[in-house]
Image (cartoon, rainbow, N blue to C red):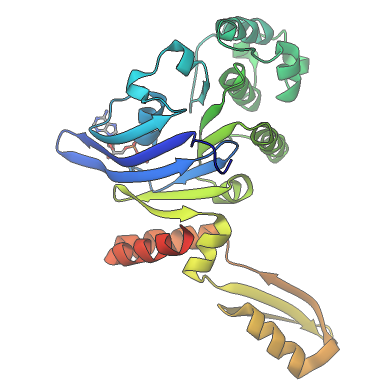
Length: 302
Ligand code: ADP
């Protein structure tokens, strides 16, 4: 929340593997209850960034504070305030769902109050499967259990790496509701996803990582305004359907009504999606205009 210390503070983060400079000065912040989506092409360094923040990987240079602590020096008490949902987690097949979560919850008790296990099982929609062996769960049920394991300690900060891969639409929607609920309860969430519609729906802020730096940082709306992506205008005139693509939708619609008045019907304006903006930004970056694009953009949103 504004005024409070940031939950995540990253300044000039650099990471080099051998001679490969993967992160070349990444800077961003996140505040309590914010949901951030970290986007970027494969190999951009998203996993590396998250692993450094989680304290699993030592950075080459830069200042990093996670819940006020340098992750390279985080102790057990600090770690207990983090939740991590990894991409594929395949242990504990012989445990029953409820027993596994109760066991995990126990580890947090010295630090702070974890979720009540039955409430948590209900929240992730596994009540019917609470006594099933983990290895008998379907892919989607398994993923919901991964999420439950990640949040069982009521983390202040939650890392979600590709959380909804393999979810069907209904489970995906339930999961989105859960993310909103956690954020409402002041959990800060950093997620990676390749599903841009998901990022748009969930994230307060989008960070795009490319070429070792953050090339964009802002809400989905701020990003799309910055890139002035095209909008699609649809309407009908006396039963005939029309479609027009424009970067100036408001002016176009105004002119349309001026010309045709109330004969215009079924008007729809669809702004450029985050996917259009993302593709435009990454394309601008890859064709060498990124320095200007990123600087102009950051000047607008910061
Ligand atoms: P992303 O998650 O955005 O796909 P990664 O952080 O996994 O990106 O990887 C970024 C780059 O760092 C890639 O070029 C990858 O090959 C390289 N990399 C990742 N981990 C290691 C490692 N342990 N040793 C050497 N290079 C690595």
